[in-house]
Length: 173
Image 1 (cartoon, rainbow, N blue to C red):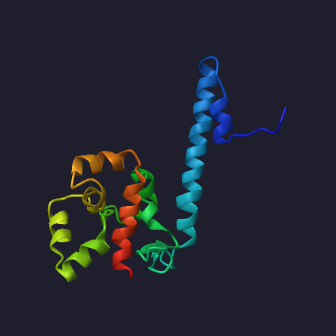
Image 2: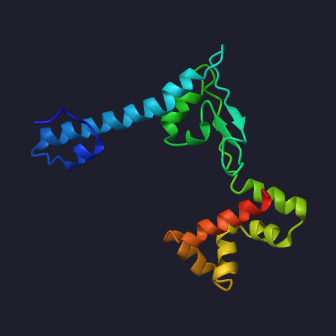
Image 3: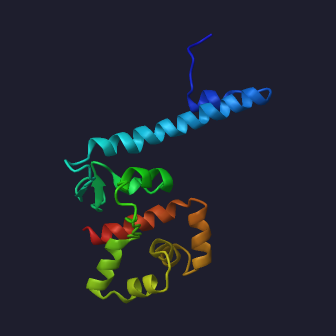
């Protein structure tokens, strides 16, 4: 034998026989996921607490290739999953009435660009609740067929990525 390992690949190859082995395997998997959450969220959050034990991330635009706004130290935009674990890290126990707000800034830069430029196509696309990248793909590649564009996006069509690059690239030129 080799060294003992709880690596996901190793654990997934195991074929437990019997109730006790299955339970042990589930405990190992639970340990792995809990440990990963601890390392990913809790440890980083603890390192970033201020003198009053509050978390104040730094907001940066230059850290993301696209120029989009992102939080660092810690990267709280990744903290929305899983909610129960995240809440226990972020909401101080002495403030149980505090809530975690979730802002979906979906394509915020494009929404602002549409507003400032008064671009009718962008404004109408957002008002109609359509995904702007899917709408772009429909217009550029699929003769305006939104259903085909949605299906293509769901199947991982690379044209969707091209359209995202076109949309964001246009406002960052």
